[in-house]
Image (cartoon, rainbow, N blue to C red; front, top):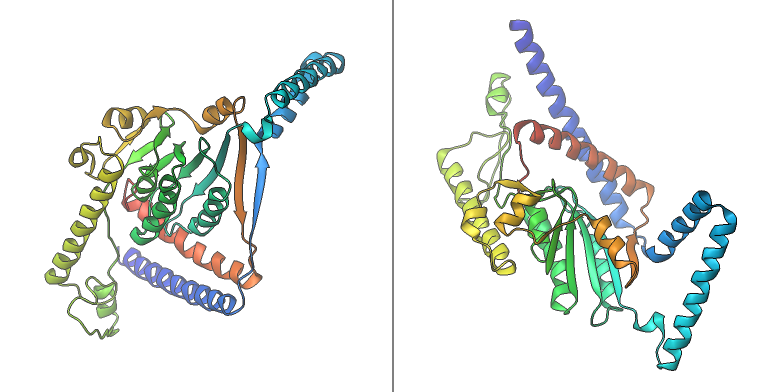
Length: 348
């Protein structure tokens, strides 16, 4: 037992040291890269109608043979020409009059770091979108920092405020901060087993005070302001600090509930804002989502009637920033692993 205790103590010290080194290295490299001019990104646009058409043509050639596939292609080309002539007579063109569906993707982490790309993508779409066009956001996120997801939600709200229909599709998970984003949508789709909800707030951290005390290590922290710091990882926590942090969590929860309630007015917010999560069908019964459907099904159904464009903002990064982000990512994955081991569901 003594060996296990000593080994556990050594392991805790080693993990703490590694995390500290990675944090410092990540901060140094990130700072170095930010001092230089930030590289400009670019928007990539892919028309999915053409992509799916190419796939369909290749499949037809494989299944029916080249001759039959060529004949079908000729018939389709002839029909397209005929439709173009009819539109020309009517004084319009298919390319101008066909409604558009713009697809954006958001893969969220704890810091909602995809928000920067989302901002640029939304700005690009709003410069082109017309009445009747629609934006589909394929959202995957288990939540994270309150302020980060608050900003991401505000970015989505720009679409709704512009009068453009916003549909949010959740194939896997939109919980806590993820649902804070999803609830902004005019219409929310969810796969049958997608995880939805967790309208709650969480704060947790380890405390090494007793370990440091046993090792005769002093930890000092100076603050100005009674509640500049509440709970700490290395100092001794008090009941007063715990009560203050709990008060702050409750205040944040009230704001979270208010935000969701304003965007989903039909919700019984008190019954769903318990921190629980639900699968797709249960989420429909609760009023958290509107329809059971995957994003693929929705896109496939739109191809015949709309021009469908997938928009991505790509930001090129220097090697220092990439290295810094890799170090930060390593720390984040380590912390997420600990989080997943101790908490069974995602929270804001």
